[in-house]
Length: 370
Image 1 (cartoon, helix red, strand yellow):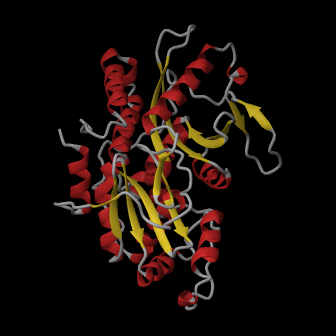
Image 2 (tube, rainbow, N blue to C red; image 1 turned 60 degrees about the vertical axis):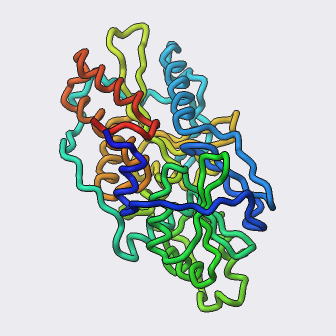
Image 3 (cartoon, one colour; image 1 turned 120 degrees about the horizontal axis):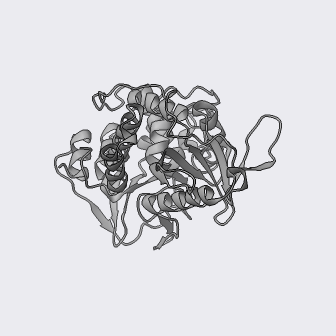
């Protein structure tokens, strides 16, 4: 059994770690973007004080999502579910209830098979690949402040990833937030910021991040060498951007549904991303398929893909563009559950027990895939 922290240190090539501890960082940023799927507490930085947000952890979010699914299973019709989905179509934005596209996992004849072999874990090496990954990570958990700083938030168990980013850039300081399960990578060196901007120019997709760059960074004369900074408007996601964005904001979930009118337990594999705005979720939905919902209680949108057709597309993507955070282990367990289902072993007691074991070992960041 490999400890997930040690596993990810090896992936990043880090054999020893050291942190700078700080109770405050003056004028880093008024606040950081609300994180939708954190693996731990998220931090707002406001002057010289740290504030912990009330957003749920990844495992808590999974429990909430499963509760919604169970509530749906209790209803007489899935279209009468309490959770409303906002259908994102070209012609309409009216609110719809859950559609009948939910998969029946007992009927798996049409599930397309994937390889049982896990690809060797790789990191983006070229500047182009690393630029796409960094752009996705910043779109998810980065902030450009008026103090001419880039701050990226990581779960404390992803220290190796923070050090990998720092090593690739050659700039930055890492701060451990006392009493919080978070660390910060802060890049305040202007040469370092210029390098970041050149790497992600034409690759970021968040309009909010573009506004931060234009208003907080490029307004400074030091950055006059950048005459134009643009978004990536290409609908093609076959690069590392979604890997970086998912390391920031995504979660992999296994849901077990027991319906009153079915003898067998229904298994669903869900890939979920929560956001305050829906624009990036539309892009992901168009790429993988799936649905976009709106959670009124939290004023957040969420993308979810529970069909096995979408799950295969998710697997095809992450088998090629690997996650670099501790979520990579969750993905491997999620992938293993898909293989159990494609082989119809989930219809056996032993197979279902394996899926249950995988489910309850996910999002704990301590267990091996086996």
